[in-house]
Length: 439
Image 1 (cartoon, helix red, strand yellow):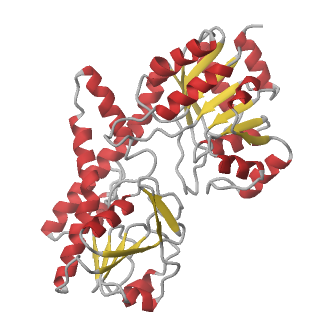
Image 2 (cartoon, one colour):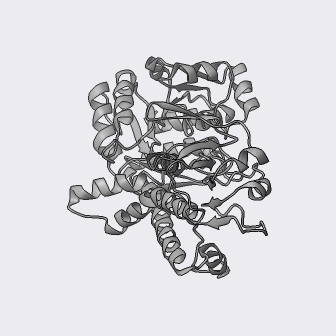
């Protein structure tokens, strides 16, 4: 049988052994879904603690159901390791490692590169390799393919299949999870695309959309998040303008979204957070420079979004000025450091930048987040306060809301705070607004 026939048969009989490299917000949910679908799955991570937790059946990702993980571990369908040699025993490998930016805002693909080098050492014939980590167009064919071929001695398309299928993880989304979110697959060669797509169809409920190459799939992922980045940049710029014009932008957007066509609502905020939207446009801008092309619209939106934390601190300072107080020496409570509501994820959260800027201005800053009791940033750990009550709220000169968590008593906050700067419009339904200012 050909490689395609062998793999298709193993998919149908669920004999495929799955490997997932990287057990974070993307990798662990994917590993769980593969195992739930009846494919024996091994997860890899360099962090001993994550591997230990998985092997004990303890969950650390919000979108994974605790009982699902424990049941899969207990029945031997899911395990984890820190030893790359497990690659020899698997037929499908998903690479789900971080792709952050370095200190110069350049793509840091070292995690992808290093993982691929290690995979190549153990890669065997008739294996599917799929990169899920968000990256610049061309990564799969220009970086991953030669590393796998050189390191393994195998030939792509003849001995193994290689493709790209971008992760679409939205932490905290109550409707769309890994299981039911549509997937895009682009691979090197038609056979590879068909087989890798068949593997995802055997696991997921969402549609699997096949494209003609990995570069199409890579660019598609960048488009998704650059689209949001640009529109959020537009609405953030309008928020700054509307404040000068004494116009409530939130009411403007609510009015605009009554149009049933041609408009999608985006909202302002203290900046962008998460693992994709703040990062992906930088990958595209960086790659575009290779072709002598400057992505002017993208770069303009990035500049606007990047300056929002400083703008929010400036607005907080102006509010304090009305009370004849300066930011320097003021007591400030930041409500919420997660990058979005009702999750414990603070990656790239603009709230951290707001706190940093406030402290640079000499403010005494504390924070409260019911999901994040402490966080680590730049090698330092910051502890949050453990509770809020009327007395605690009243002790601060200003409360700055930077995450719209739904399990906070905002009525109590409004009733006891001296001043509130609500960057998320989370208090929009509170009638008494004498001490509330919105972004």
